[in-house]
Image (cartoon, rainbow, N blue to C red; front, side, top):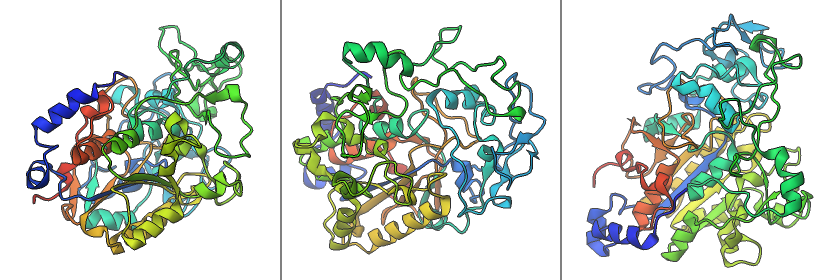
Length: 478
């Protein structure tokens, strides 16, 4: 991605009075009243899946939905049940359905595939009709909940629900966490020759016959002829593009845990592109990335990805992939534990910008968490923030990193070859937020970066955040 010259952008910002001090800044800056921004980054749910029945929102009843199609483009006669899940009937009607008919909102399900290339296939040029065909989870991806008992639903009724908020990049968590902090895709740059020969060929996506960077379905004897017969099988998903951009999960070049035994040549080299953390530090704006389980992992008491309730996912920690935040570097001090976050909340000592990543059990991710657990945690965190001495000038943004492979009926806008992807549930909470408002402004994850940049007068990181719509429409007028 083309980066902007910081000095030119700063001059442009100052020309619009965003850099002006005192009262002039308050008047010119739409976020001048905001002293503390908190971003809560949950996991893997689509808007329709969670808020599809919310009054006034563009939900599952807003329009006629085309049927899901098979590999050949013809409508599926039915939806196949999720693999090995006998809570579902063998076949369901080809339409969105209420998921609590089979799985309670606090029930665990399998984890639907959410891949950079497959999400583009699922979106199908905006027709949104290949979510089942390109998934490993059958009918599950078409399920949605009545979320009216959720704490986030109550917050949305009190404050602002953004019903056209899309996740930044197609695919999974790692790439979308990168976009949250840098608006960029990481690059597997300067690999050693042994890595280039032995490891990279296993990761790079295969080109199809048209030359597009797409995974190829193995259609012969080892792949089903219909989605009703089973999920598709692919020769290779590809965690890197042909240009060696990392679009799938890789481990950081600098391990954060003694338990991480990934071979060095299989790690993403340390990244050097600028991040929002760098920009804020340059302006002496205080900030931190808080993560549940961080201290236990760094000090060796908790293994990353361990199959236990307090699971920790390294690829949800984007700053650790950057050279500026390696152990021993000055930037490392900005990476903190959830306990530090809650202590700062209670004492009224939050930095001006806080990113909070819940521990696995509380982030709402299918499989190792559930929607009710993630929602309850958000409710508790927001209640604690509202009791904080910092609440009086706070802006809280609760969103999900990506849709987790779940269907949504609204066509995403087109920005660039990375996205945006599907709509995700997003609630905006603040003493200055409009009350009981469904915000239909088209946003994506880059809107968070743009809002932070506008508030603190920092230069954009790339074209995507420079051109993003900030969140001012969610706030009441001064």
